[in-house]
Image (cartoon, rainbow, N blue to C red; front, top):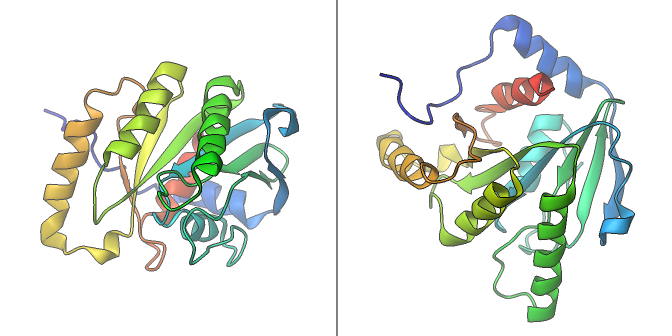
Length: 216
């Protein structure tokens, strides 16, 4: 019997090369968007990265793209207040969404972020998949489930990417995966594979690249 939400298998040599080539080409920052009318034309495949503040989203985007400072990693969680668009060649957009769940930001700012996030996730026709980043040290939290529920309602397929896997002991992996799988079971939009990553060690990066390259 196949386990629900298994870890994504390592790509074979051919798919690994496809993923490598995709991000070895031009990857450029396009624009930061603060309102829906600022979004670029939805004329290409689009994937987005979402995650609560301090989940390691910028570090993961930098690792996937092979650029050290493409996405701005900040010591101040929640600093990124825009939807940041990056072009990957001429066929894909990679989108960095504002971090959510940062309690120390002003209430009005948080409300604005949340409204923009909801509008984007429910109204972007070219969005093929959302990668929801979850910190391996903490598992899925209620604030993550809020976004997952929004993705369910918006019929946007999302895939959980576990970050900072190097920060927990191998003996803790089973407990983490059990928690994540049990929470995902009630989300119909959840893609049935997990990706375990470490931006620092490079674990899972080739897998994530090949997944993005294979989305049509």
